[in-house]
Length: 146
Length: 146
Length: 81
Length: 81
Image (tube, rainbow over all chains, first blue to last red):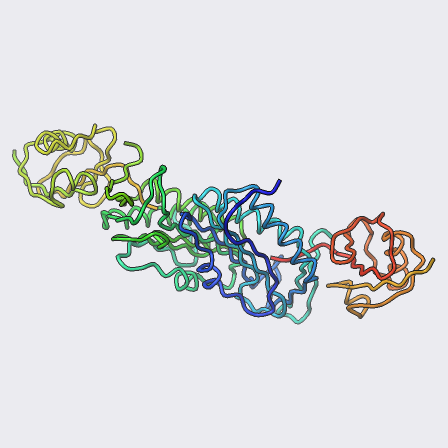
């Protein structure tokens, strides 16, 4: 059932800072008319609480295999010439990129749809957890469906 | 009817190369959890013809006022903390960015929707035209509804 | 009641006229009449319903009057992005 | 029929157990039984239907058997992105 397709499709976990620019430049193909990218950043608030920083923890082995599976699903569903996603672990301050997705396609429909698909699936399926550190001193692991 | 909102909203026409990285870094806000970005690049083909390069021509005065109007519409419709769009003019080779849109929001829904809205409206309303130079030597101005 | 207007041409219209701008003296009452005159002199070849029109740097209506000193542009279908 | 398995804990489960990994000897026949034992010893406090389970680096079924040398992780709801 595998389609012969071009391009690079890679998901990985990074302990060091995400560099969106080098990631974006690496997604290149002469047939590509559209790159849709998503950058998730640490926000200064969550559910009304002031957030100072986050820690992300991942089950790296499983996160990378599940993330790679998501990119392969995107490759099958959308008309892509490449797709990359990287997720940070460790301590992040407000404003730092926590996750980056780039989807390269001939046309903007495929690029937007794939980019959205990847970030939605990553957020719901990939074993990564954040602990929020609040300005008033406490911290919490976030488990959304709990 | 104007809402008091924060952030920078700017559309402009550029005769020189687009630098997505500096544009993306300039879109920053401590409440921003999501940046959706779109980069339109020169593709090596159009309607089955091999494309070597493009020229973009703009009615700059009107393009900038209409583009700015689109960003203000996006600001009214979506929950944005900033939005920028730049479109190239002049001669571009395959692979070069022709247009860049970045939409900054607290959450990914607003960022994706605004980014998509801006590029769709820019493509349909802003007075910019491309001339395609084909590998076999001819060239054509593209007027989609003609 | 002739007025002086400046016309701007873009893309394939510029190729057709051979100029980016020109100054014309016209007795056209509306932008639609002005287009009809330009179409006749330059054989622009576009049906008016495929075009938009701008006056003084803003989109305008074909029924708008032509004023002295107006900067007018006929806008063929756009292809940015 | 006791087997040796290694358990990995993440996020709030790691806080609860106080360890990232541990080796245990268990007579649990399935991953669900293994979770029940861990829940009892560590008071993990999660109803099993809120968790997923992984074995040897892949998502698994709670009804899967526990084999000797298995690397098992209980996966609380994720919050990446």
